[in-house]
Image (cartoon, rainbow, N blue to C red; front, side, top):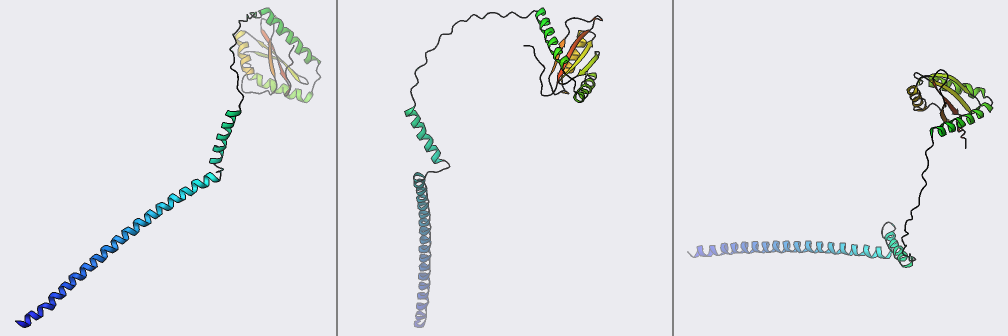
Length: 231
């Protein structure tokens, strides 16, 4: 009996030591865990403080050193705007001016006789200049071929009576059976596509020919020249 009691005492003591040892380990692990958490929080706080300091430094640097991209132009624009507002001369109030009624004289529209007379005078003027020109054989022949070949494709029921080119002008005479044929030819001859790079004018004869046909005279100017206009 005495020997059994003596054997159980060291066993019980060993168990208490193991329990005590485990408590110490758990306590140590808890302390380490708490220390790690505190360390991590301190690092996070330190990082936030560093970022705040960096932002503060950038703001101070921007105030001391103008930003050539954004800050300087905006600040300069504000200064100029304030300067103009303080130095601009005052503008007196404009007094409204009462509109005055001005009687415009009605312009009489030209009569048919006036239009016919002006057309005849213009035709005589250009024809006189054309007759006074000397011939340019090379330019004249090329221009005659260009005008004749193009108008033949656009002439419709009308007929091409003559094509003559001299130094800077070409004269073309065309006959038409009726008003409809004349209007159709003018639209076709003067419309696109372009085939002549100078000026072109068309003047209708004042009266019908002996055969009852409508005739018009067309003038073509050399490239770079204009059809002469009677002032």
